[in-house]
Image (cartoon, rainbow, N blue to C red; front, side, top):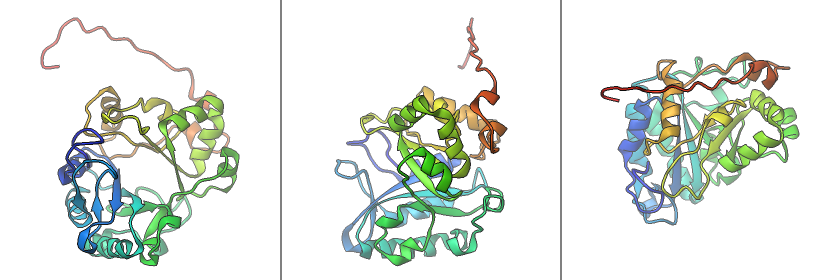
Length: 276
């Protein structure tokens, strides 16, 4: 939602709609208490401007499925009181209507809960323990879950559970036990987010995280740097629908990273060009 840096820039609804039109399928809503019982979205404790939760939902609803029919994940960062969370739940159900995926109506088995079966649906992701309003907790389809270690996550994780890791933590897990991390990503969802020191809204290299099967590698769409161009290129090859099928070793039980084969580095020298 930010148009620039993480400290002073403007929050704009069109930043959400632009990302959705480019095929982005997971967006963050940083929710705080606002005046007159209207929740707001902004980067907390900064000088960034405010948006109402309602106007953001209206914008998201208008643009979500213009480029892709596949489901959109609404990642809620909750800093709101129970009263305003109840207001959020009411707005979610009123604005999104039948397109809001209700947990009671979605199959919990991975074979039946797929991007195809959830086309044109909005999926709410949040930490249930932060939901002070039962009405909001009842809308959370993708609960944010933290396990003490990768082994526990691999044995107890469920297909709709999500664990968020900073880019730094994810890189440490990749360096220490990449096969175990990849195994976790076969049974549950992982979301990687930029470290807090990226105040200029620059991006990190998403490739190492993709290579162990992390499903949601969050980037700052307002910054057209090399990592974002990598992301655009990766998802352009599937019609910008926002989803790609992972290679078999990153999906099937028993698959190993070694089965992916050797990595290839291709160097291209551009002699000349026009309109690059």
